[in-house]
Amino acid sequence: MRRGTPLVALYYVLVVLLLGVILVPIYWLIMPSFLPTSEMFAFPPHLVPRSFTLKNYYDLVVTYPKTVTIDMLLYLRNSFIACGTASCIVLVISTLAGYALARFSFRGKGTLRTTILLTQMMPAVLFFIPIYLFMKRLGLVNNLLALVLMYPGMVAPFSTLISEAYIASIPREIEESALLDGAGIGTILFRIIFPLSAPMVVAILIYSFVWMWNDLIISLVLCHANEVRTASVGLFSFIGAATVEWGGLLAGTVLCILPPLVLFALFQKFIVQGILAGSLKT
Image (tube, rainbow, N blue to C red; front, side, top):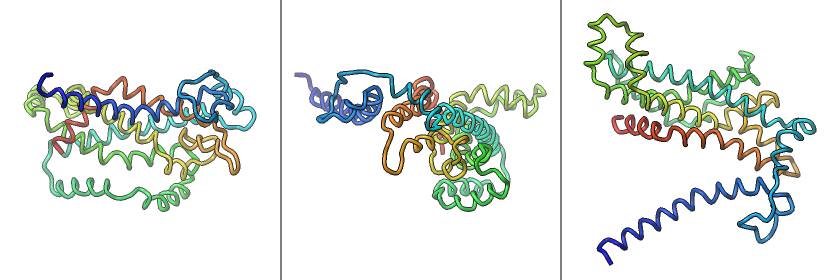
């Protein structure tokens, strides 16, 4: 037996255990969504399904919107609109703020950076009542615009720190050469900084989108009417006072986790590069 083999074996055992901790809950969520109700509650539970059905997904898309006005596709559309728009706003704000912090010296810069850090340590629940009252005064309660305006304030501080650290790693000589050639600040930002910061841009967009997509409390407070519910709030529609529509709830949950999973699968390389580059220098 080679030296170090027990350590290698222990490593693989830990990897398998870790994969089990991560994948078993996902499997136990997805698998029952394809089961009929009779088998969903079978005891002991079947690790491998003995029957297969798409009825839960058919009911979710076709039956529920007609009979009980639970429209999961509408909730998903609302989430895409609110989270996608707010993510783009976060990218613009955090990139410009990060560029200013990384490249310019001004009075109060250290205080500003400390304030940004402090905002990340305060629980968001402290702001709910004043934000609700403010949005109500503006007439934006039960309006997706309230989420578009609210979300950037919650996500942009952390994204700004990532942006500052990443932009600071780009050599100044590139910008100085562009300035000598007559380039303005807009040209430098959009033709130099953004292309060289592709991992940072993707990391900020994905981080912002997933954070907002998973939000429940803010969207529940500001958008609780049926026609403006987001996906996370819409899942609560399947939970009644005395009963739970388990088939619709499980199928709806699977649809809700698909967008973040697809984004992570497609852009995981950029996400790791962008966040690690920012975290190591922050």
